[in-house]
Image (cartoon, rainbow, N blue to C red; front, side, top):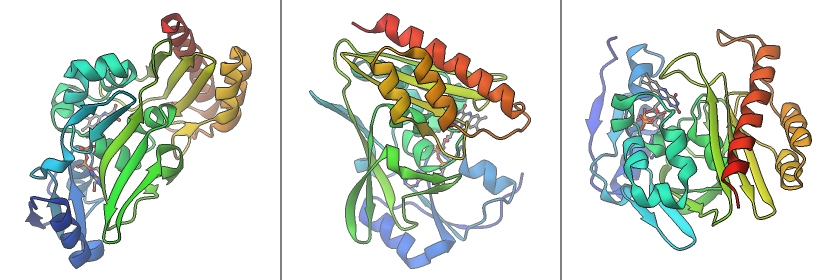
Length: 277
Ligand SMILES: Cc1cc2nc3c(=O)[nH]c(=O)nc-3n(C[C@H](O)[C@H](O)[C@H](O)COP(=O)(O)OP(=O)(O)OC[C@H]3O[C@@H](n4cnc5c(N)ncnc54)[C@H](O)[C@@H]3O)c2cc1C
């Protein structure tokens, strides 16, 4: 319950935040909504001398809906994802998934940037962002760069982000009319991480399929996506079952997780197909 002591920083712009990260190296960590980091600090599983709070940085806020692209500031909260009408129209999948994350209090403060940067395979937004083929914008001492969500996750808590980089925005291509979307999640109770969850987009001859908490990273499968684009649902499920690599834990043994994964994927496909066209 009691975290170790730390120094608190509240920079007003991205450059100052990066400067603090550079100055303190391993000793510093950014904090967004704090609803993954603070629990770890309270258990003393994360200890750092300097916390860099991103809340005062305006450039990290806001949802922009363009004709072909949606841009989400890293500090956009899950509550904002749910209540933004333009976003719900442009990419309804995001609202559907955000409503299945945590609980109202966590969603008031938990951010989309924290959810995707965290690197916990239990987080729901990473698989969703892979399904949508999102791009993550990073700013660091050497400037800015973009990394595809499909290339960002390396292992549990290891991502392509360098320690001194800040995730600033997420760009997502708008799927367009005729594309059905669905997020289906099996969990033991409200606020639990998924036993298995599936994000699906299908329509206009294309498909994209990703899954959550069934490996040490989110899993997007090209062959599963191609099979679904060809209308082969069984082939899609078989390819995805090949791609995932669940481990036994208190959510169940491996065989059970594979079973639930297939059920979630089939349900998400059915719902996405019913919304397509
Ligand atoms: C009871 C409970 C239930 C939950 N259930 C779910 C759930 O079902 N599904 C789910 O997906 N999540 C769940 N969460 C997690 C919640 O959604 C978190 O808030 C979220 O994962 C992290 O976002 P945050 O803004 O709180 O990040 P923080 O906790 O502030 O940060 C998390 C990590 O990301 C890093 N980070 C944050 N922002 C940035 C940035 N812009 N650039 C670089 N690094 C950054 C931090 O340094 C830290 O390492 C739950 C949390 C709680 C407490």
